[in-house]
Length: 264
Image 1 (cartoon, rainbow, N blue to C red):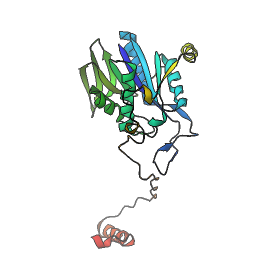
Image 2 (image 1 turned 180 degrees about the vertical axis):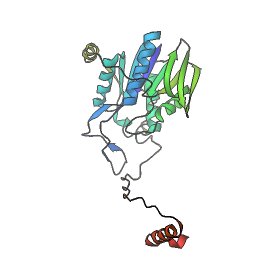
Image 3 (image 1 turned 60 degrees about the vertical axis):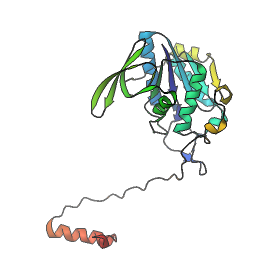
């Protein structure tokens, strides 16, 4: 079985600033780590390979420093790493990111299964995996906490609203996994040392079937961030217990003080 795993490098902290013109997160100077949800996606792939054999190829999109994600993936046991990197890909939203991933994965060959983490800790949209499946025209599975793969089909245990559902679908498909279903293994020191020497294949715009710059990055994004601001902190208030006429008078006074009595 040939499995593709999509992983991403994200800021290690939640603080950051946005470009006031483009609304894109400024990542320069921020410590970066591998997205935790994506490590679980790789763990799911490793467990399937242990039972079904095959290969695991990891794809990550970002600048050259995102190679660290692939080195981490090698240390866990991935077979091949692809860095999707080109200035044309910068500033992509979910639509453009998923389209770029689809084009990159297709350029690398054919796959039976694509695994993604449920979401990333920087964007939190939880939409990229589903959008990727839509571009490919593949079936998709969400909220996966268990996987059993066979030669031509995949059985997944999915956490739905307050219940569990067992779903079997034919391959190929895209599956988005949950963190608690696939706790990542500790990287191997031996594999880490070997991974430092393994090659990483770079996929630029020129390697893709669609080389139209307007379909990628900020130009190919359907959404624009107009304004970024921190929410106002709620003022802490003491809880007041009143009833009857006293409570009504107290409430009327509050409405008067806040200028809302005219709406009554």
